[in-house]
Image (cartoon, rainbow, N blue to C red; front, side):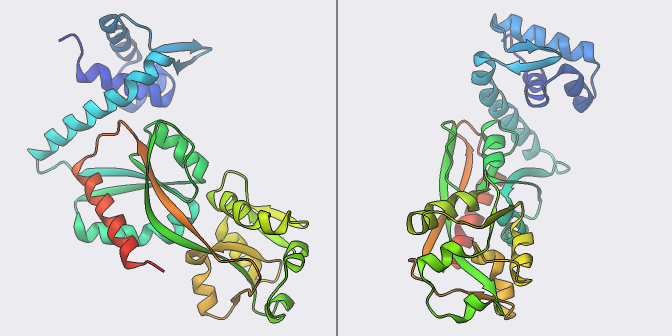
Length: 297
């Protein structure tokens, strides 16, 4: 056999970090050893895996085909190794869109600790577009996102429903006007998430067919910031119930009564189609499935 796990692991590091310099630092190898391993791998396969763009190495079509297969082999080898060692800690890299990461992931980690206490979870936060990109690049094991995925290399697993509601401060005049018309909502001061956010995409798909447009909207890059601004009377917003449920319970926010039909959205788990499903990842999938069943609204 011409290939070695060492060559594949070095290839993986270069692909994910973009240069032999960064890969050698991450793997505690000399740059010459890293470059030599890549040269050996390309020679064994008789192909070129990267295009050289300035000082960066960018995966070409060959490299993109090899990367998920290489990572799958590496992760399978690590699981075999871990099965015979007591000092190896299972580790998961879970990417979360910000709403899920801030409000749901802490609960999932608690359940995961009860089920698989030996698994360490690294949480990477970003908007849905960023998390799906990382899943497609295999930089994370799985992503939990609000919006649907448009990446053809990803497997998409629906796992939980979430309700979007329109909220205002308790003392906002709109909170005391009865059922709001489409025109009243259209002319209100809105605070909305930025482009690329799963929440922003869902809000547009739900509201715009009824409202046409939001004539007075400002983009804010955080659901938590929007929630606090709405409570301060700066505007109204459409957010996940997970985000605003606490301030509604405290009486600081009001769920507005309006003519638009209610809207529930599907949350998704996304991962690369060639991803190796480890025992710890299987356990995580069971946790999110059970969580969804227990918290169905």
